[in-house]
Length: 247
Image 1: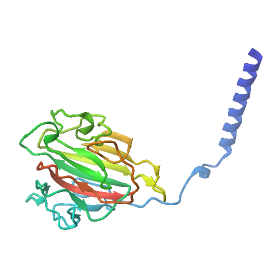
Image 2: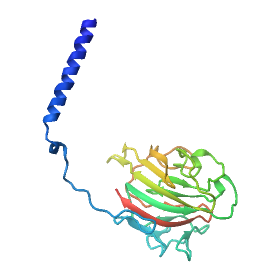
Image 3: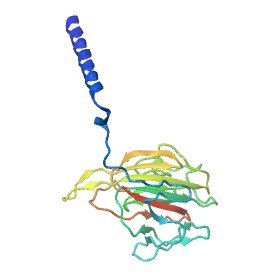
């Protein structure tokens, strides 16, 4: 048995040595990839989105948004270039439809603390109008973990609570990989969401179980690209600096 083991080790060493010698003979150009060349994009700053982004809201108006009936979005534009939910006006939706994307959104819950749990600064951002990343004042405000800020609603709690204090601006950077369905309506690939909250990774390529449902289990009904939805949950949550990149 010892002789067999020794022989195997010797064979492995010889094989590794041979491979190393072969690689030393390879020109470095053999493993260089030159095409396609990545497109040049100017990166984001605090004042400007990336050069290839679609601006969804920059304080000048709500032209990129509509209400549930397709009419003008009914939220309030503030003098400081932000917008705020108008209670009872309903959610707003982007006019343009999106699939996989990178979404940047900044939001702020009301300065004055009212309510508790799900009643404090509640809103949400829905990818493809179906998959919700929760918006909530989760600063010293306990609620169910898969419903707090940064949760993929009723599916995954955030890895950590990265909230700034109540009334401060918060930032989400969301990477969304859309699910895929075949011609028969069967899901052939799950969707995935990655979220950075104030620069902190809180969802790491989390696999979507299906739609975000308040009651019951997630659903997987075939669909294509759809709008981004911002939720009216009755709280005056504010938003600014929203942009998106198609992936």
